[in-house]
Length: 254
View 1 (cartoon, rainbow, N blue to C red):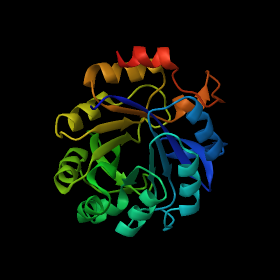
View 2: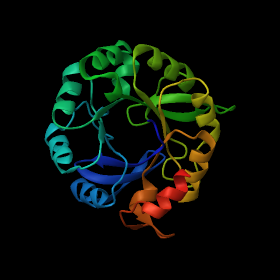
View 3: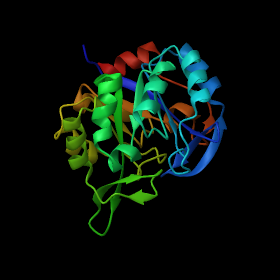
View 4: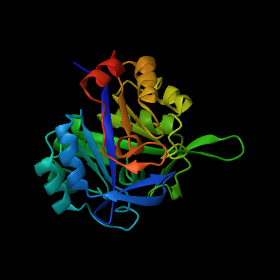
């Protein structure tokens, strides 16, 4: 049975864990493996790990790191970054990840979604849409290459397209809200949620557990992902890996 999921999202750059603000800055916050060990103890629903520079730098996925993460993880693991081929996806799943996150490569070659779904299963194919408002009227556009390249495409149109091609889940990531910690872009979520029937995960903007609770209350069955909220603590943003305890989580999901 489908249920809402609360998902820490870890960003990796040069093998280190970083946290960005609107896809910029990239503050170093620790070692990814150590973070996974802590999240294991906190019994998180699922973990998303994104290598934010792999595609931009033309690198393939860091398979050694993926294997280490998967071996350590006691929760479902979704990995993204540099995935360009069916072979990449198959190897990531073989190494122990449950899901493969796709972005730039499938926007350039949408049929890759179908090919990968046929190879590893629909449930393992996640398409990430990095979205930013552009222009005087603030129209939403999808960006690739770590937010540096505009596709000129609307996130709703792309979400519907990838649903038809066999994606198992859509992740909508707000570039404008990334790291700002002032809440999710509800208008963006509304637009995508009403357009597709696939499982949807939202990312970008969570500043409190109340932000997560509000999204779950409004959309019921949804994935709610966050980065800063689960790696920082307090107004001075001290680095502290955290996650709702069982009582807090029960309240968020009720």
